[in-house]
Length: 353
Image (cartoon, rainbow, N blue to C red; front, side, top):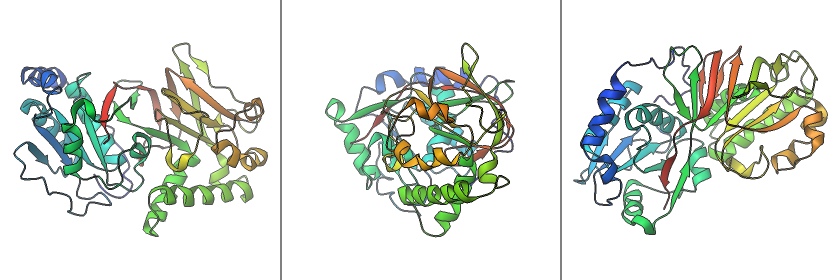
């Protein structure tokens, strides 16, 4: 829940028995039926550290329908979600940015399983990539989100499935989010933190970071970390087929990987080509200058066999195995090197207006 980039030196532990203990309690409280009732209880996870909150937007805290939680730590989020489940909430409002969404989904899915209540996300973070995709109003507050839910079928609902990242040795609990990046993307996210410190936020921060990274990759030497790439293996499941490598640079390394289940990305960029559902990857083998020169067209959705021949791959997958020798990023925060399975989590319903 911290505003700075957090390094997950230790991934969430597998908590034996908690899923089976809490999920039946949620069912016994009538969660499944409550989802159909706009008049049901509402759980609010409020992150006061989110960029746009700063102690504001608690005007509905005294609403008798609202159960408010202001967790200070990630374990606190899990406890709040368990309390919501036992209370039988019919609607979950996440007041925070992409990182808060990641932490809430990581805690909530083991509790609710496939029976998650509808979710509203208030765009209170720095980049709010999920909100760019699902189209929640930029000035949404808790009261607006409650009114949208109370419209019932007359309101707007969008479904998405998050990424689900699991260690292959099974020693850590899965984490869930919407944008995974590695290689130069990790450097870019850290540079993005510098951009935030300079006052750039949302799509402007993404753009400023992207321009800086492009300049580094175009004009830097091969020893430049923006050009060096990261050791990684990418195997598409279930067949175990390697993601193609065009052969430029070291075949054991990739310059950048960006993976998401979102349809629309910030600033309208189309790394994967046409908008579509599902788990997608954009992979750059090496920062060849001819490919980097074509980046504006790639970001606009251009697709051509020329790209794969020159080391830029757009891939759809059911799931994939990631073995990486350096840190990677999930929704703005750093995770350790290792071997992971990246798949899709359960389908979630988002209330958007």
